[in-house]
Image 1 (tube, rainbow, N blue to C red):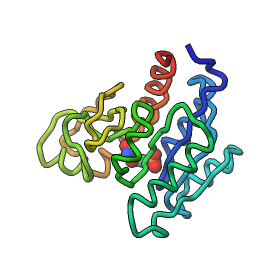
Image 2 (image 1 turned 90 degrees about the vertical axis):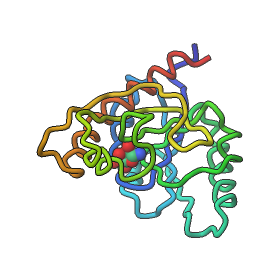
Image 3 (image 1 turned 180 degrees about the horizontal axis):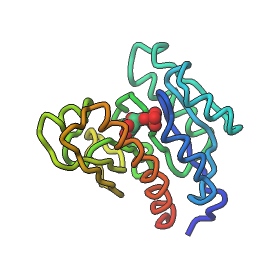
Image 4 (image 1 turned 180 degrees about the vertical axis):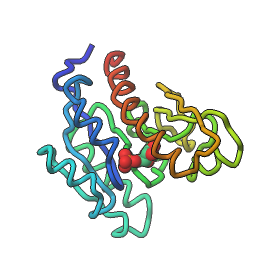
Amino acid sequence: MANKSCFSVVVLISGSGSNLQSIIDNATDIGVKIACVISDRAGAFGLTRANNAHIPTCVVGYKNFTMREDFDRELAKNIHSFKPKLIILAGFMRILSAEFITQFEGKILNIHPSLLPKFKGLNTHQRVIDAKEKYTGASVHFVTNELDSGEVIMQKSVTIDTNDTAQTLAKKVLQQEHILYPLAIKKIIQNYR
Ligand code: GRF
């Protein structure tokens, strides 16, 4: 098993970073050291969360690149400089190229707000309501070249009430995500060879 105290990860964000916060808060229990938080948006609140926790940050602004591949190469260069064992996507809103994913194969995790394989992609909560589902939830999975389709590591379900809206559901699912992501990362680290 890897030495837990030095299990280095890089977290990629685009926005609020509430999942990042949960990983920061549980880092000791999970056994990770966040080497850097990288955002594709300079204004992402998650960068403030990282600064408050004295974690190095870096912005690779997607608007500075016309070609997705060039953005991905710059992102990969930054990630390599930290030599992380895992790359954790936490609300990172860019679809990564096959070239990027291949070079970090088996090392990229994502959290998605549905019970995969159901409701891949965006706007999940409204689609869940429209489909009159009784349950939804969140999934942590490995990232592969196919969107939201890699092996599921762990899931947590949420009951849908008749008066739930996409907004109330998003809030309920997010609360569960904050519990789920640290547990799933811990599980991966414990199995890491
Ligand atoms: C979460 O709902 C996550 O499932 C999705 O993006 C959202 C990120 O929220 N991939 P936050 O930035 O962690 O608050």
